[in-house]
Length: 465
Image 1: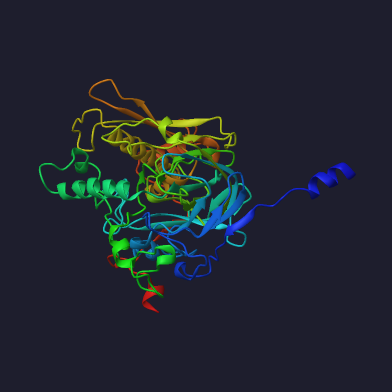
Image 2 (image 1 turned 120 degrees about the vertical axis):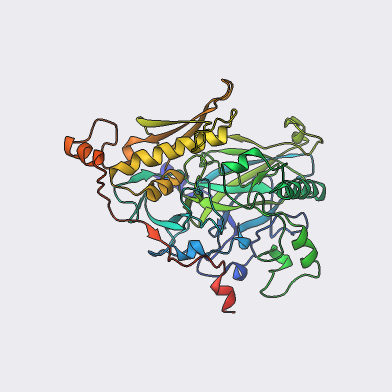
């Protein structure tokens, strides 16, 4: 007894270096949060190598989405504000050219805020992977019960989550930031021209990239685009700062659902101190996060430990025109939900009009997702409910074939145990199959839907100030 008591009493709790209050506005948080990448956003905390520390994060929209039965907040969400990140955190001893080793020791939802949401954006305000099929905004809210999630908006489903940060990365150098902005601006300039990428014809999310924008910018200690005091450099930095939407060489919004407890990240260091930031906490996510607003989004915390591998960036493969063209490496931990039976759906690089495309893996995955949606919609769900479910449940996406011309083959595997019914072919009653053959479907409670009016992106909390 005494030895166990002594061992327990000697456990050191991690130091909380960044705390947040989800009831406050993003611009009211202290220390301040940020929603852009720029090397001049100053760190709000400093940690030593080997120190265990805790970071709290608000949800990626900064509290714009509510736990209710209307999707109008998703329809009208102000996407110029996203993603809200905690940081930057300076790691003592980290210098450009080093590799930052980040160990995820623990993570979870914030106490007293144990709920999350999944949504689809309206086609004219964000869109998503299947915008051409599901153009309206929808929402499902989820309640957490320990490791499990369930939703009143998608009844008959319950699954174990794998909590992770959708976004974590280091700050870019000025040179890397310029490289990002130039290549993404060139892509946007192609839209509507003969140079536009072929994939634009079958995937309809627009814009093609989110370029720097002063509106919505919060730059930590440099200030907010509208609220409070701003640094003299605010306008310049905000007009240069990269949006946080895609993953890039610094890590960023990679949305890797397996980056949970026990995982390690190896992130390149581009600035003094590395300036690590994180956010976009997810309770669970399906591979691809296909609905875009698409994991179970939540506020949360992470317990981390950082160490520096001197000159370790030289270990990362460089594939591109210069030494900045590297990507992080991730080491997956030992903890994942245990599902043993799966239903797997296949997709090919043939579009919905029957046109053949050449080894197009994105189109093949789109077809696999559509096949899964339309199949599961026969079991009491709307297609929009299944779309949301595939974005946030622990489904597994794979590129199964990428060499057999002309078809790429993608697969989507859905765990059978998450449903309260047997959804395998041939396991339904004769009456159920007969009803489906006659075009009759029985639907359960629906998800949260939008009102008919078109979207008017706006954060009413800002308008009220």
